[in-house]
Image 1 (cartoon, helix red, strand yellow):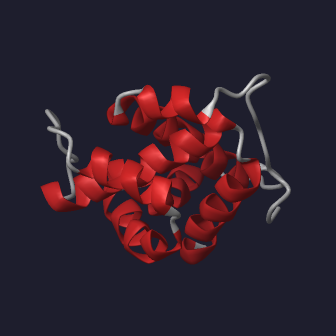
Image 2 (cartoon, helix red, strand yellow):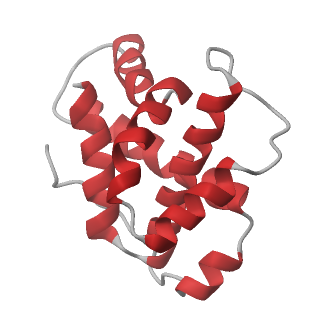
Length: 139
């Protein structure tokens, strides 16, 4: 199913509107986008039990794996994406992941914020490139 999964907003928002959102709001959206992407990729065309599917999704959407992917993708981010990543990474975060340290959790939040931004502005091609890269690295 490589690169044939896509979803989009009916009417994307402007870059200015997206950049005006709080970085954690972008991360909130990005988390959902990546989760839906990964769940769809592991489910379509398979008959596995949901527990097995869940384990495959966790490989991609856990804070630890997101942080590792962020380290790989950061050099590929353009200036705006790097800024979004930094803003989200540096936000005061009230919660933490169960199985990740705070540094990993912050980098994961930065990656999710970039995903949220790309989704909201309708940059499907770039979003798909990053999402598939994260997914393909783990499967």
